Structures are given as C-alpha cells and as structure tokens.
Image (tube, rainbow, N blue to C red; front, top):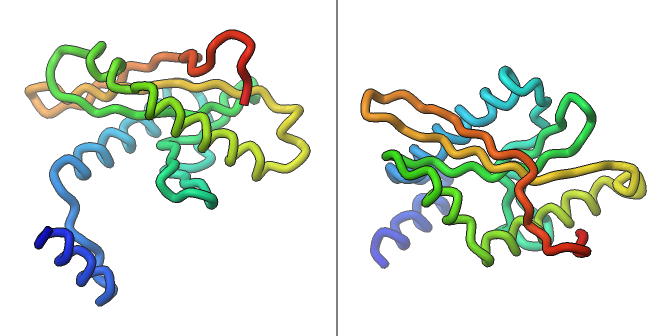
Length: 151
C-alpha cells in the first residue's frame, strides 16, 4: 500500500516511477522481440504497447505488418530458464479475452478498410539465458478463437 502511494505521489509531481525488475525484464524482452521481428522476419513495427482508448487495461505488446501485408498482433513473454511451454501456457483464457478485445478496438480504429485486411496473433517468448543473452522463440498464427468465431 505504501509503495503504491509513493508511486501515485511521484506521478502527481510529474516524476516517472522507477521500474521494477519485472518491468525492466519485460521491456527488454519486448525490445528484443521487436528487433527480431523486424530484422529476422522482415516485419514492419506499427506500434508497441498499444492500449485501447476504451479501456486502457487492454494492451497489445507489438502490432506489426508482415511482408505479405498481414496485420500481426504479438504477445511477448519474457522468461528465464528452460521451460518455454510454461510461458506459452501462461496466456490463459483471461489474457486471450483481453487480446481479442484490444485487437477488435485496434481494427475498429482503422475504419472501413479493416474489412480488407488479414490479421493473426503471434507469440514471441524471449528466453533469458544464464549468460545474459536473450533468445527469441516465435510462434506464428496462434489460435485465439474457437472455430467459426471472428473478431
């Protein structure tokens, strides 16, 4: 409670609150993922940390365009250790619902041309190794919808 009050007080004074270690790690992972998608996969980064204007809690880590013109919504998970599937599995039903809402809002903001676009969801897990390296693992076209469901 006291830490939260200190953060609020710092924001009122116009100071940027100090990032926690988890936030620093997540930001580093998102940076590695964005660089990987741009350089290795040829994607154009359109937005990072896009938040819905309707509900600021709904966030998409990276929005990009693939070389073939598909809009790609990317969720980034940064983890230490070897268990990549635990990171992949941490995208639970609640997080999928948030991603669907946020993607719907992003597409709505594009106006009528959104009906002409293709889109998909990807997951990038950034693994922090013991020697300090960040290794990205890219999972393309992750199913968020049951059959017959669309945004």
